[in-house]
Length: 333
Image (cartoon, rainbow, N blue to C red; front, side, top):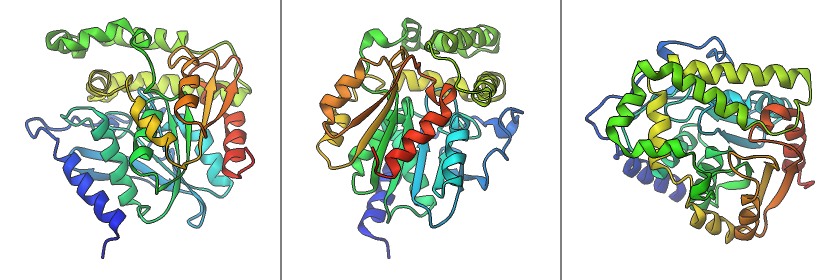
């Protein structure tokens, strides 16, 4: 017999998955054209599960008896952004769940509205899938994943043991949003942008954007430097190999509240959930000044500042992030 929490989850999943248009099929992921920079064997026990929206790729690894952590990645780069961090924590004895958001990596790109409900339903589905709906777990969310994690926590505070955010979206102002996203309001321009003719331009734009948002700090080690190169190549590879990648990016920019998620942050602040934020003070993707808004909305939050760090601190400072998160998980923060 389902517990009340599990039953509520099933109802929520049913309601949210019902948003699928049914008129178009999901666009296949890297499963149809794998990336050498992101092999399916990257994570132990990597697998996929089918839903009405298409397949979701996830991996569950680390000791079964270990404290649980789910990682939610950001806007453009799939779950390998957490490779060094998640594997280190698994070696430390934690039970780790990673997954690819819709339209990234090996998860399909559904014909749907890419709003708060779609992304929360995906996470809710996976929590049910791996059998975590009757226990507590830690949530680590990066950028867009930070917004998704905050939204999830605001509705599921009884399940989230700790919320750990890394440069989280959702609190930005309109001036922080790139001007080019305004074209997403015009369907014809969106169709042109999705055309293969514009792929070289898109690759150049993505590379330029990533370079401009690195911050001023250098990689902490040769391993971190090599990792950053691999992640950049993998992110670019999605443009040519994941048929639904642009659909996901464009519709997320159009439909998801990258700004205006204040109420969810305030709701988390009214709960007793411990919250921590890792943030580069040179981050211009999700500007560091918004960390003060987060502290205002969530009085119990504790801030870890990465001096000179950009939006890519998990690439430039993976070992520091590992040690900081261990400090949090071991209640030493």
